Length: 155
Image 1 (cartoon, rainbow, N blue to C red):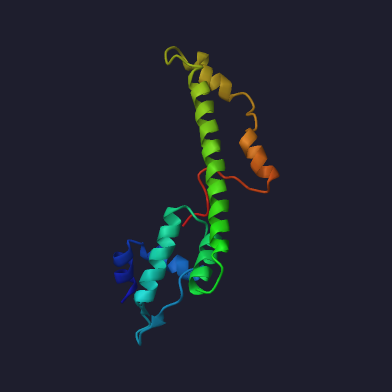
Image 2 (image 1 turned 90 degrees about the vertical axis):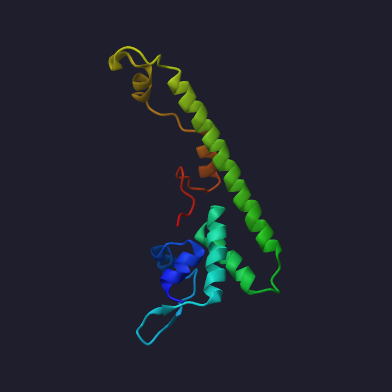
């Protein structure tokens, strides 16, 4: 099948399929005489696996590890368990960060009644003050994690 058919079958955009190929997550397909990519059912299976991992917000490195385990049936599944435990920890940290962010936004919103001039707006005055570092972000930095809000290995 051609790339468009693979995209339609898996619900994955053509550009993303090409990206996964460049990144080595999806094996290069065979080429036809006209140099078109030719995919088979193994590509459908692997792309579906990758898409499922991405729906769980896994990074490319996590997906590579899981694909490696999938390709070696004799491998110890303890590695998969450890990977999921670590991923779960990252999710829990992100949830804590988001809860902290929500509280900060609620506190900020409470500084303004919504009436009056912007010159007297408590939100704007508060935003003029230097931001205090978040405790959760500091703990991530100490643990060697770089946190960029809303980003966890996209694509």
